[in-house]
Image (tube, rainbow, N blue to C red):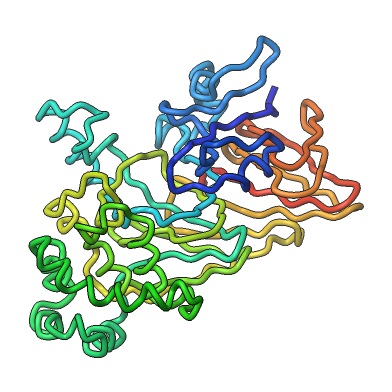
Length: 400
């Protein structure tokens, strides 16, 4: 067989919403947040594949015939399914984070192993030896922090916000690195002294609905109101809300996050595709471990000019591919109407998820798909998709 039904795993992180993912999957809501829906072979939460012998974790299926399931070139290069596909429902802000590049991930993972730090230890930075570039495609209006503001814009922020004027000379003399190092190493008492009057001014405006979501004050106020610890200890990640670009992304548009670019998801739903890694260096807006020296070592201290990826429509007019420089993955959106047929032969293993509508996929088997259902296709699977109405799917594969 080369077409299989796939069932992902829900991750119940505290920042997630309660309704979007259950409604997508057609399952009841619970009192647990549903933050992420994982589709892939990551050993911590592998998807289940329906086979003639019953359900089987995807990583175990791949091991039965790795080169012919993932693709010979994929297996030779990666020795695994190199991507992790997700649906995210972001209700509350995620931690500010940076991902290491491949070389640094390998070194960091080996170093922490040699130091005997358990993989599940809260102070562990490197869970594996892989990099973690990622691309997201918005399913709703989506907001995120993405890289440092261009120099002129950041200077304006520092000089016009009264609480930040003491930082102007640091930025002028020491640049992005000096500024960020200063606030990340600042004593907590000084963090409170600087940020308390600022957030105290923002909170009434936030509650009155007078701040747009493109205003950093909106997210600074929300960060304080959502954090019980902020009564005594303001999160220094609030500085980053003002120092970074706030991106507003419309449905169907994409953003790529490369190694070293600091970022944080703020609100909305998206499709996310990333290298098969769990390496995260955090920079605030979280109660989790923040290793400042390691964070400073891997952050790109440069202006980032946000780039919206619109995607490129294939010749058939049915598939929009979102290009990125990452070899590990490629994401595309397939939109078909009644009478249209999408035909393809997989160049590598693929995972498809139906976001809206219903369709039939025919290969060496025929599977009827409705909203929220997924398919795993093996390398070289020839298949076609058709619908009686309208259907929208997203597809994850390897950038071969």
